[in-house]
Amino acid sequence: MKRGTALNLFPIFFTTWIFIKSMDFMARWIMIAGAILLVLGAIMHLAPWLLNWFGKLPGDIRIESERGKVFIPITSMIIVSIVLTIIVNIFKR
Image 1: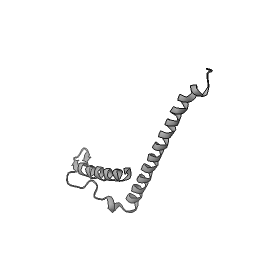
Image 2: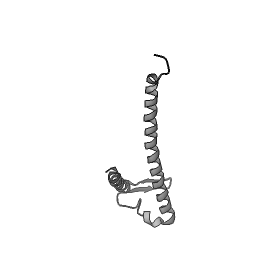
Image 3: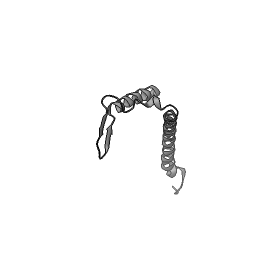
Image 4: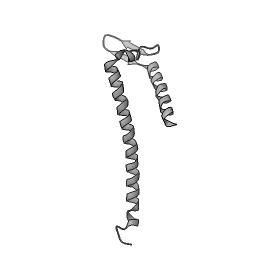
């Protein structure tokens, strides 16, 4: 069989097709993430009081001293994680 025939090039075409298909999937998720960030940015710019609760819940750790500040939003991150889990499960179905 000669070099460069269709059977010899099949693995190249197949792997290229898989790569392009995975790139389409990744591009879709990057666009969705960008849209979400755009909406969050607009909310923070136009209506900052809607996200005023973030970081001020019981369980969020804030340590301030003369030399610096440490902020660990444990409870806020748990709530964000639960909300994102619900949203992802709704879109998955």
